[in-house]
Length: 255
Image (cartoon, rainbow, N blue to C red; front, side, top):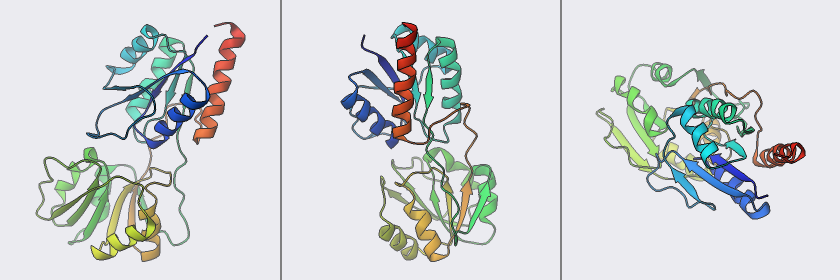
């Protein structure tokens, strides 16, 4: 029997995991993405773009397409999608493997201020006119319109449209990974005083954090929401092992 796996993606981890499964397993794999990025990276397996209409819609999709297993490999901050994945797996009665890459850990020399969300981050940047590097997704930028006295440098995969309604904002459109030397040069050239970042984990976006450490720049670090899955795996290899284990249990039960 050819097993079928639905992967909820949108991250490099999801793409790499899908590629490994497609190459090594022979399973039928579908990678689903929300479609927020205009020009997504080419994927190694068939893809589906768009939402499901909540947990119930996702469960129906799993059952209608006879998927044997659901993998949540979404961004660590995609809390709503992850919660829907947990609920949908229960409704559809399929196992769930949740991949949550390890968070960055504070190192000696880091000047982090941990905050709970973007709204608190706006206040944490402080008063006075600062040069602020916003290393955030487009959806998180709008609250910074409440602090128009700062000068913003904003980097995103897609253009920010419409632009922020602030007097001084410059935009960089780029996709990681970013080299440490390039991050140091960018922060120096733009005289950045403070960085606002999410603790995304992984190597691709870590350069700015290491650059900030070397340059003595403050970082407002937005903490992760708790993952709704009781047990997550930290990397691709662990996810592959967990997937194989869950599918072997199905075989043992004759499902």
